[in-house]
Length: 335
Image (cartoon, rainbow, N blue to C red; front, side, top):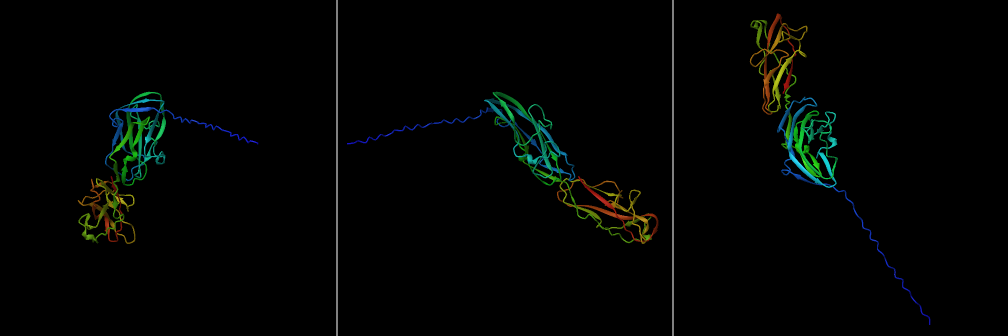
C-alpha cells in the first residue's frame, strides 16, 4: 500500500512596511504685539472728489501725502520668517513705468497710483522703497524680536487722458508681512473718490452774428448804436460745479485788429470802408483782443452759462457804404 505524502508548504508572507516621512520646512511662529491690527496701519485721507483740468499734463501729481503707524513689535521663533509685501490687488499688468517708476493704473482711466514704504524713515520713491504687486522679498532666519514703525508715502498721478469715474481705493491696499503677520498696512479713505474734469461744452463753436443796417448819418460821433440783439452770446453747458470760466477774443484767426479793440472787415469790391467793429460785454465795456476776461468765477453743477455780448461800428476813416463781413475768433477756458 503506497502512501502519498502531501507536503504543504507554508509560505510566510512578510509585509514590508515602509514609513514615509514628509519633511516640512520649519517656519517661524510670529506673534504681533500692539493694539490689535491698529498700530501697523496707516490710512491716507483723500478728498472725496477731485476736479481736474481736462488737459492736465501726464505726470502731474494730484495727491501727495505720507503717514506713519504706531509702534509694532513682532516676536518670531523658528527657522524662517518669510517677508512679503506689496499691493494685494494690483498686478504687474497695471504697471505704467513709462510715466514714472512705480506707477500703476487705477480703475479710473488717466489716474495712477504710486506708493512707497519703509520702517527706517519716511520713504522716497527709490526702487528699494517702491510698493509693487504682492511678492516675496526674502526671510529672517532664527529667532527674531522685531520692533518697527511702518512709514508710507502715496501719490495719485495723471497717466493719460482723464475720464470721469469713481476711484475704488480698496484696490490700492498694500501690506508688509513677516512670518504671515501683518506688520504694516496701507489703506485709503474714502473707499470711493469721484474723479471729474471741469470741462464744459460750447453750444455753438461758430456763432453767426447779424448786424443791423446803418446809414452814414446814423453815427453818433465816432460810434454807431449797438447793432446786435440778445442772440449775440457764447453759450456753455455741462460745466462741473466750481468751474471758473474765462474767455478772450484773439487777434490770431480774426480779420485784423487795430488799436487792440477794433476788428477789421474783410476786403472786397463791394466792401464798406472807413469802419471797424468793436465788441462789448453786457456792461457796454469795450473788449480788448488777446486779453482774458472772467465770465463766471464758480459754476453750479450742469447749470448753463451765457456770456452776453454786443457789437457796434466805429469810424476808422472816411466812411464808404458797402458790405461788412468780419471774423472774430474767441477762446473759452475752463479752470
